[in-house]
Length: 111
Image 1: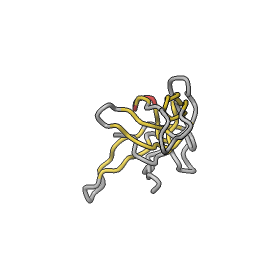
Image 2: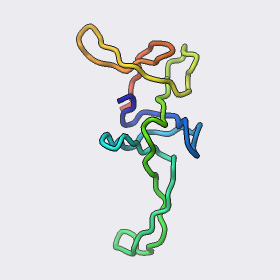
Image 3: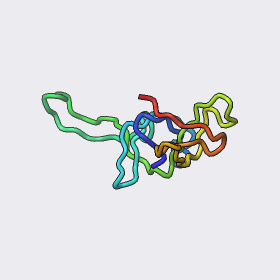
């Protein structure tokens, strides 16, 4: 999978194309992601102890995994701050890492 939790991604298709956000959750079975601040929906909620008023609540909806690209943070990359495709690369010790398709630098997920 080219996206991980806490990655900063850019949306490339849909109503929110061009916007950037942080990945909150990944649904691997459905191949969908929830991105902070992207694709808001209105959810109607009943009154409860948590929400005594009830009414409509705004929350993020999942979008397709194919509609997001990881942002390359390498300063020397021509795509710095923009979405790039990521490829998998095996290191000599056997570890698998994600690599920027343009500059070849390793993409590190912030913790």
